[in-house]
Amino acid sequence: MSLVKKIMNARLNYDGHDYEFPILEGTQGERALDIRTLRKNTGLVTFDPGMVNSGVCESNITFVDGDKGILRYRGYDIADLAEHCSFLEVAYLLVHGFLPTPAEYNAFSKLMNLHSLLHENMRNFFNLYPDHAHPMAMLSAMVVSLSTFYPELELDPTEAIDITVARLLSKLRTIAAFSYKKYMGHPIVYPRADLRYCENFLNMMFYTPVNDYAPDPVITRALNQLLILHADHEQNCSTTVVRGVGSSRANLYASISAGVCALWGPLHGGANQQVVEMLEEAMKSGLSPRTLVEKAKDRNNNFRLYGFGHRVYKTYDPRAKVAKKICKSVLNHLNHNDPFLEFAQELEDIALNDSFFQERHLYPNVDFYTGLSYRAMGIPINMFTVMFAIGRLPGWIAQWLEQHDDTAQRIVRPRQIYVGPELRTVADSLASTPYTHPATK
Ligand code: SDX
Image (cartoon, rainbow, N blue to C red; front, side, top):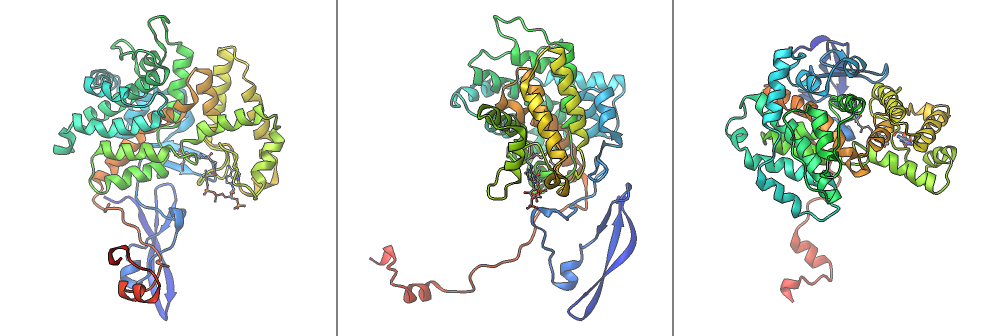
């Protein structure tokens, strides 16, 4: 049942005709021009590269106000959730629409434990990759391969959704940790029944037979909060891909695997890795923060200040505020004086006071500080985007399920404006050029 209200009509005068299209309004006052009858009535399509101005669905999962810097999951403010909840509670909230009771949380946690192992055959997959294979490649391949081990989702897409959600959330975390061990050449560490979600992940990552690792509660708390910050963000690039693949009725594993690939891009989730590489490169070559800002302003190169700017936020990304606090608390707790943080803060101050950035409303986004926290935790740079994927997984699942149940949704199939050659024939082409087709030699 649609929750948007039709509040008025907009009129289009085109080719001597007047057309009317409804203006819709959502529960938080967002307004949209409803063009669902545009092509049928006028023969026109809209032209909107990157879908910058296009709403593609109704959703009651996440609300973002880019001008005011507001982010809410199911109505809860992101800072409130990061302060008071665990990542698993927020994952449950995103999928179900309400926070779990203690009994629901315990049942969900038990399912997570039950589904935390990979099929032993999947362990062999890791041996077939080259030594320093990027973990995002392994993650995407492993997730889609889960559909071969758990085909029931194909047969019964309404399989108890908690099992599917728990299986994906839990196994993606195991795949991530196993890919780290593969990269390090260390023996893999299995999940443990006595550890909660983030502790289990950190233990699978850092325990070795010669390092009796014990998860640090402050680090575990910080990791819960970082994953919460990444859990959903309405119709971002990778979520649009997950919905797009799901719109053809491909299974959830295939859709999530495609989302992992979209997230990998340096303009999207790959930016957290790019931020630290940018800082590393600048400091190694003795560039000052001011020089880096000037380089980002120079239109003669396509260098960008990674971790800055956002398609929707035209003010400080509320997640970046929380991520900056987490970063400082992690570094203080570890008594880790990271020169990268100092450089990053100076970079932020200069950029925020620079007219180029101010005119374009470029502020730190979620990726600017998160990598510095992961680095301090001992997580290697090529795992940063994997951390983003672990965090974003419940949001992808919730969005996929919402689309799956939305009767108004159709297979994604946008239009275009064709600017290619007019009709021509092979015979004409052969006749008009000295070209001799190999087959006629
Ligand atoms: C994420 O959509 C989401 O919700 C994504 C995300 C999520 O949770 O899913 O929030 C996660 O992807 C965060 C963004 C991470 N990416 C980066 O940090 C990469 C650096 N940022 C940019 O590439 C850029 O800001 C984007 C890609 C994030 C947004 O690009 P847009 O909206 O397409 O903006 P644009 O490229 O049209 O830029 C507008 C202007 C341009 O200058 P002019 O042509 O007007 O002169 O701003 C400039 C751009 O050159 N600009 C930058 C810049 N970002 C934009 N200039 C320098 N440094 C930057 N970072």
